[in-house]
Length: 447
Image (cartoon, rainbow, N blue to C red; front, top):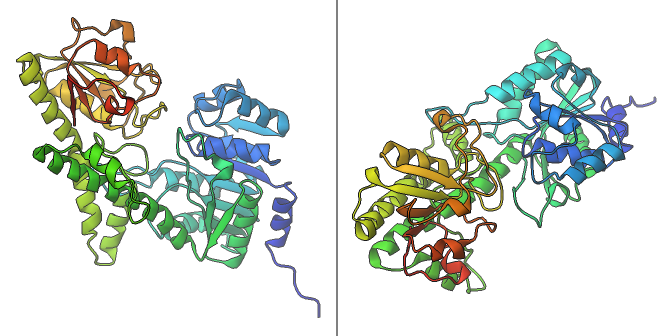
């Protein structure tokens, strides 16, 4: 008796020969590089976003993310068929659908899966049978199984029969010139062998290395663990910074010395707080989920508390500097905040501690401006609508007549720190930007 052909085999054949049509939902820091890379690797790709200004820019050949250059965008368009749209009815033509939407926290620091749920509902309304759906958005272990799959099945389709589901966490690192989407190993997890095979085959045609794991929960836990590892270690050096500062010890010198040990130590560096979409947010997804199983994530929560307090520590150091060097209080001072994005050499504003610092300074009565060569204007942000459209000053506008102190929050390479030092304005440096460049530190206080 002839064996029955597995239901997923037709889709697998299309993925292998790259005739499968790929839909990527969410054209941000994760989705756009993935869509462009998949197109360059030979797939027909449609990128979807609810913000119609993004497809408009992309269709005009304009990239708004550094990881996807204008040239890369042009080559993706020239190489194959790539379309950008805000019309989600096109999902009905897709064989593989990848979800790359935000997963923020609520005001009470609980997971907000609104974007994932709404996207899943949209997919369920439009998708055809025999489709692979992959979630890349970082979330708590169990989301793919407990949230995404039931919504996709709500129109009468059966998982692992009419559609297949997998989780493959994004690993984008804005500003990293060494690793790109195609060269970062890709974790793939699914709850059936067929789903895992399909997802591994798809990503195997897009990136250089695929790492399958046993389940979607495992893949979700991998991503959470990566980010918790960084959050906890950054919290540790932030706490050491405060302790060593009280002892008159430079934590940067300590880390530099410890990093010479060839084993048993990995350097992490302190800062004014955590930024980016992942590290300040993702650990709390596990904290929330752990309560369901009766466990308290004390280590993770302590790390979060330490990192959240860093902006206040920085402001306290700034107050000391103003009092000592200017004889002024914060409420009557003029402050230049250097760097408004969360990370050096990128315009990424997500969860930037610099914005928190600006907000605290403003609420304290200070006059505060920012200088950032990568951010000309503060975009719309969920938590700071009152800072919308604040614009960056130019270096030539900075002088001892205009500012009482300079607060370095992000150490972009494009900033002339030597010129800032030459102004002889008191500087509070949260990134070791001055000393690491071998500049004079006479009027510099580390924080």
